[in-house]
Image (tube, rainbow, N blue to C red; front, side, top):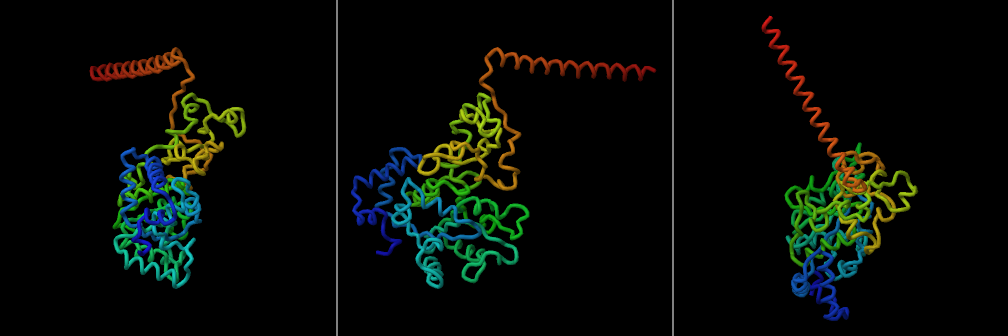
Amino acid sequence: MGAATETFYGVIRRQGITRRNFLKFCSLTAASLGLGPLAVSRIANALETRPRIPVIWMHGLECTCCSESFIRSAHPLMKDTMLSMISLDYDDTIMAAAGHQAEAILEETRAKHKGQYVLAVEGNPPLNEGGMFCIHAGKPFVEKLKTMSEDAMAVIAWGSCAVWGCVQAARPNPTQATPIDKVITNKTIIKVPGCPPIAEVMTGVVTFMTTFGKPPELDRQGRPKMFYSQRIHDKCYRRAHFDAGQFVEEWDDEAARKGYCLYKMGCKGPTTYNACSSVRWNGGVSFPIQSGHGCIGCSEDDFWDKGSFYDRLSNIKQFGIEKNADQIGMAAAGAVGAGVAAHAAVTAFRRYAARREDTNRRH
């Protein structure tokens, strides 16, 4: 059988994996995707019967950090995802073929698996000077991107470079680096932002598509809801300190040593949608906030152009639970009192103005 027509189950059985371990893998996959126990049998059936999905992985303007993240996935292991679950037919970073051989693979996949392959894009196309700032095999990358997207079953934008433009599109953007959804306008694009995205988020998206034969449910911006429906702030283990009004004021002060909230140090967790605080990095070991540094908001649009990473967010309100009920009551009463006083002042002024106008009419 061809590489793209063989099933995942067939590949791992040839490698000596037992049926029992296969089912364990399906259970782990269901859990990592946030699916219930009933999904295990469905995942198992799909991986037993469906052919592996051909994947074309293309690189535009980027630093390859998305690939570096992907190959460090722990759940499921990258080797299971890349070598067994999908058929990675083209990736100019890790493929053995080069030159004309590599280019021939693109044309062969497009012709042989029309409407069946996934186009994964890392980086973005520059549009200035006819796209000449990023050349692939003698052609502007933007041309190859458009060509390969035409017959793709789905398009995945890996990382903030492909999704938002990232540092290449930061002001003044001399190359006119452009997010891929501005170039590919006739297809739904699965956007997986982050600089880079979390490894397990990337493999989770691939696993879902392999299992169910369709993209995961997306939010209004095109991001998978299973990973981007909550802010980092919502599940941050330092959230209790935020609610208590306990903040780090300076790096390495006593509050920092106690693990207080990093909001005043510029943490963008309250406005950043990602799974860092729940999935975490390096196989679930840690994430930046746990390491003592605030979130820089790398999965959000224009994060390079929104000022310093250490500028404090100015539009976030918190409720200090360190105040007791009497103090909160006094504050509320004060606010109500101020409101009543302001209303009384306005009313008195209106009455005074009305009397003046009436006196003027009489005279």
